[in-house]
Image (cartoon, rainbow, N blue to C red):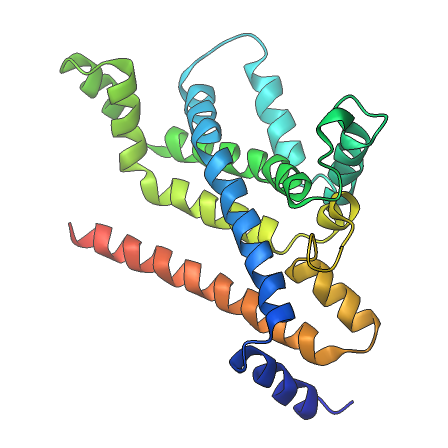
Length: 231
């Protein structure tokens, strides 16, 4: 198979600002970013509680979250589909086959990643940090924020990992979004569709975008870690 011509066409699509291509890119990015923005704060807070507090059923919750890390995302999509379908308990909201349904799926996928990364980061921190902050008069919230600040790069790594997972997700997005052109078609579903039709140029172009996004956010994280190491 000759890859040169499709690759040349892919760069042409990107550089000439093909409207359909960039609509797909924009939809995929804003849904993924918004899902992480909405999910990260409560998940980080919950992860901190799991790491620092002892309560009945805590171990079971941690095991469940760890199991969800490897849970098939297409099954998550199926569950959300049934919840949002017309006969489902959330059907009245009419979210199925909209970008919001995809965002809900992304939030569910990101939840265990963000929480487990936070638990691991907080448990790996010096336990005296929280207690010292408390003994110096800091309230529980301030002491928690101090601890999270000290492990911020590990938490940020969780955010980057969660974003990378959702922005490249196919199964869940396809089930709850329907891959409708101009409405719910995002980068992964468009790649799958165009490749199945033999239209490799758009698939390659969108693949380049995913690679660029992945490299960009990891370079940014590495730069921030380097800046933090100089402080």
